[in-house]
Image 1 (cartoon, rainbow, N blue to C red):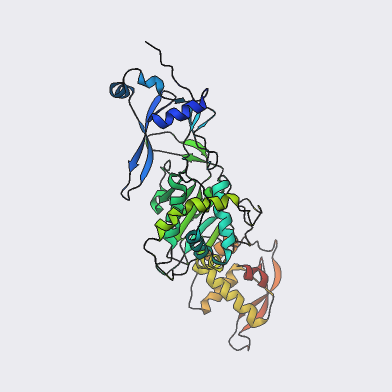
Image 2 (cartoon, rainbow, N blue to C red; image 1 turned 135 degrees about the vertical axis):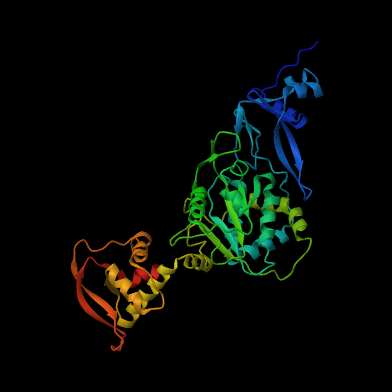
Length: 415
């Protein structure tokens, strides 16, 4: 009987690639997996690698069949769209090839969608998709689409990205993002979150860290955590224009776009987009980027800035901070001052004359922890403006001594 040798892609990559198209099994180290397409409710399928018993394989296909199964040293995740490789240096690439074959043609429907989502930043939007396709490991800003109105096309854009990158894009919920079991999404190119609401401090910190992380600990139920290269980008939608996520002042990792309602609602629009993907990829492959790399997330923060980002930052300020800013600005305007000085006790007492009540600890938290201001090194004399209803300005000053904080108009404007 002719002896059938085991095929190793380490030695015969091309031959193994052909066999992998014909044989639904792979061997990783000493463990066998069946590569199967799991049906989804919407008619699509998702690639699954299911552990399979060797005896079951022999029973179903014969004792010699396992020798045909290609074997690998382990798993790896290397994102490639052009020149895709399933085997890389003896490791099985978990990143999936996309089925679209770039072909010259019309992509007017795709252009309409991109123009609607990115508006006057249309070329930047094309650059964003261009980089996703040709440079998938490049870090990109967190894209956040917001609108309080319905029928804006936000979800359509997420579905288009899913169609474009297929199994390399995944839809997550807010709970999925917070779960410690993350192996189902940490190796994806795109993490798509519809109706996002991640406005807790721990959510914000995790999102910011992931957007720039080079590696991350993937964890699955019943398995040890495994450190993997992390290249995922976040695209999120929300009907909440003010507090969908917690964004701090000065934050440059977000690209926030307010989306207007669609003028026309074509029921077959998504299928039209799908049919034009090959032509769109051909265009991306042949166009030149309109930007060059100006930050670790490619785009210069000023180029992707929108007023919607400022609106979210302002809405995320706590009530004490907002009231304190308004109080200090009112004093500066009333007294025609460019800077004013106060001790924490002075500020707390000023709130006695307003409808808003707070205490010294809350004021200290804003001034020291959020604004990062330091008091004068020693107890020094300073001019302290206090409420005075008999003065035409509404305030009069007295000279006091203490370790005061100085607030300038320029500083408050940046807030």
